[in-house]
Image 1 (cartoon, rainbow, N blue to C red):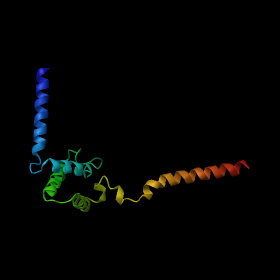
Image 2 (cartoon, helix red, strand yellow):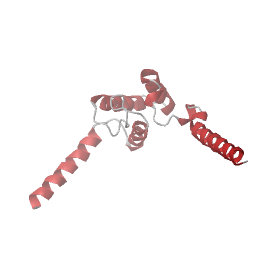
Image 3 (tube, rainbow, N blue to C red):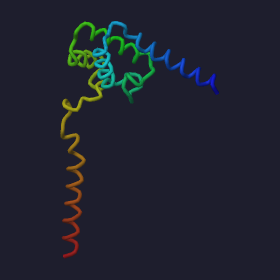
Image 4 (cartoon, one colour):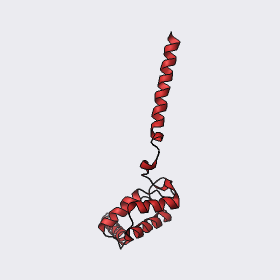
Length: 127
């Protein structure tokens, strides 16, 4: 049991040391920014999650490219625009402000209209 605990502790220590070495040119603030950006960009291959949670090679490449853009002093909007130009607006996970708000209101409007129609039909049928 002691050997297993030693193995896991060495594994996790090496994992975190290796993760820090992936982006050697970034300071702590830039790493936080990288994590925030990669949490809000969808994996083009997986199409269900962000590039932070994906193990696909393209996600790792995109994260490295974002790190290079951060080092090049590009703003978040410029990075999002670059990704959006390359892969389309679908790649942006938090793209709510660009969407049509009617998309979110359409189901509510349909529900209200259907309730009104059923109510009016029921009232007319009972007379």
